[in-house]
Amino acid sequence: MELRQLQYFITVADHKSITKGATALFVSQPTVSQQLSALEKELNRTLFERHAGGVRLTDAGQTLLPYALRILQNIEDARDEITGTQGRDATVRIGVLPTLTRSILPNLIKQYQINQPGFKIDVTEASTQTLVKLVITGDLQMALLDLPLSDPLLHVEKLWSEELILIASPDFNVPTSSIELTKLKHQPFITMEAGYGLRDALFRLTQPVGFNPKITMELTSLGAIIGFVRQGFGISLVAKRTVQSEITIGEIQSIHLSTSIHRDIGIIWRNQRSLGSATYAFSKYIKEQFQERDNEW
Image (cartoon, rainbow, N blue to C red):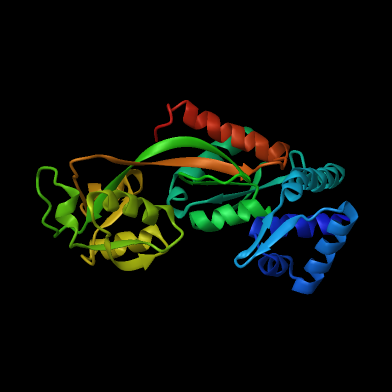
């Protein structure tokens, strides 16, 4: 059993496809197939079931996966320990939603560095969908993103709940009292592109009352959404904390609904993989900060 075979096995299991796994590994599909066949021959067990949409793990494959992950993680830990990248000099690789980079993550890092002056961190900003993939493949050690999220490959913990609000331009005719969501069904909506949690939250809000939002713009940044909303191109669902300053100075206004809206933000990392001492310490600090706030931000 070779380490390369285990790496190929894990990657194909992650992507549920030999073709996609080969692409992620930057090798040819026949090479991956040959290595998997050799591994199956050595174990005298079939590890994957082939089907039209790709592959799925057999019972033997499910049994092998946690051991394979543990073997590769032990090798990474040994290398990091020897080269000194597992301790204080380690760089934490974290992913985060764009809406969390305005204040929350920068504040957390700044406060943490006061007591950990040698702390190093690489931050990747991306959609929920992309962050999940990067954590699964090991490109990121952990990520802060929106829930719900369920994946057997991931450890998921809720950190806090935050209020979501609808925003509109200063010229939008907003009633002084709260209104029913159905009154807005014909309004143009501006939201994030597919893969972002705020878009999913918008659909979870409107579908139970009988309509899909009329989306006229799909964007990738909160700043862009605020800009187009401010000019009257549509209304949008955003986290309240991210637009409080714009509301205060009158650049935009909030639409008061008859029911409140919230979403959960959580932290994830890959099951069966060690976070390393630096990443574990930072993740513990993050969780403690929100526990002190009773899971509200």
